Image (cartoon, one colour):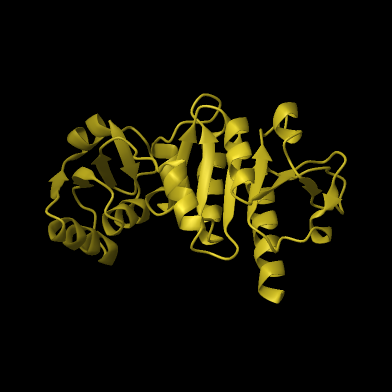
Length: 243
């Protein structure tokens, strides 16, 4: 089953018109948000069932459900055409490209940050990336229900397509890179972040127009990829706001 777990993620999914089959609430759960979830499900005509512990455990054994889980249809993805059409309506569009993010918690955290940063779409490979599962949905705090996600077979042709449509490709890399404050982001930007251990693959790096790094002031040389993504995305937004 494709599950959404946790009170906030389920409520976000209900409010974003994500296709949901059923909502299950563990018997004994109370509070304002529980009632809001019930009302939102009823408004959309989605069955909301109060179930005992045995039934709830048969649906999921995850311990972070907060007593609420939704069963949804398969994740729907946007197409590159949809993303590019959306971007043409903006002066300074911003896209995020994930190159081989493996950890589901990182994936979910990045999606949450991207949604908060106003990213127009997140692109990732269907072969080398963590899947969108209940951990990703939970960690994203429901962002997967709001942000446009594009799953592609190969990132490199996708980057070439973005370049043809006026995007500059900015890669996050510790090697041969400029500090994030020294690059002008006042143009359509696609930011690429790479694998937790290996970073961006060599062939993808070669397609980047600029490479940037976050200056480190401590003894540790790098940040978690989800944290780094947030810092760079909000630096892009800061520069654009000031220009």
